[in-house]
Length: 303
Figure 1 (tube, one colour):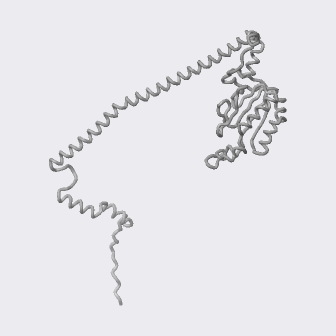
Figure 2 (tube, one colour):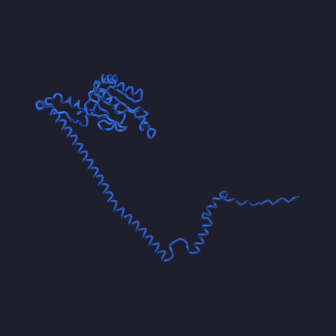
C-alpha cells in the first residue's frame, strides 16, 4: 500500500500583516534610489560630502558671500526707509493740492451764484424804476430767469428698443444707417418743443435744462445738445400750462401727429401724461445781447 504523507503537527508560520502591500513597503524601506545612494556613498568616500567647507579659502569665500548678501539686504532696507517718507510726503502734497483747487473751484462757483442773484436783483430794480414793476415777475418767468412750477404735462421720448439695447459692433446706435430710423434726433425734439409752445406751454425744460428764447437744440455727432449741454435718452420734456388742454392740443397739432408717426413707423417710444404740479429750474444764464430799455429820452434822441 502506498505510504501516506506525514502529517505536520506544528502550525504554519503566520504571514506579515503588510504582506499584501509589498510595493508600498519596498518604497518605504528604499526611499532613496539605489543610484543616488551609491553616488552619495562615493562622495562621502572622497571627502566631498555636505557640511561646512574644509579649507580656509572656502570658508572665507562663504563668509564673504554671506556678508555681501547681508549688505545688500541692509542697503535695500535702508533705502526703503529713506524713500518711504519722501513718497508719503509727495502723495500728501498732491492730496493737499487737489483739496486747495477743489476749495477754490467751490469758492468761484459760490461767487458766480452770488453775482447771478445780484444781477437778477438789479434787473428787478431797473424794471421798477422804469415803471414796469408790475411786470417784473412775469418777465422773469417768460425769460426763464426764475424757477417755476404749476400744472402741466410730462412728455417722455425715447429711442426705439433696438437703438438702445446691446453694445459693441452689433449695436445699432453705432451704425450710420440707423440715424434716421429708430433714434430720436435733434429736429425731432425741436418739433416737440415748438409744438408744446404753440399749444400753450408757458415754460419748457428738457432733462432739467430750462429753455429760453435764446436756447438752441442741436446735434453734435450722435449726441443732442441743448444750450451746448449733451442730453442722454430718454428725453423728459416738462411743460407748464393748462395740463388737459395743453396735452390734447399738442396731440392734435401737426407736431404731435409727427411724433405719433415716429412711433408708428420707427418704433420710437413716447408717453404723455397730465401732471398736477411740475417744477422747472431757472435757466443757467440769461444774457441780453441787443435789446435796450425803452425811455422817452432815447426816443427824443433818435428822432
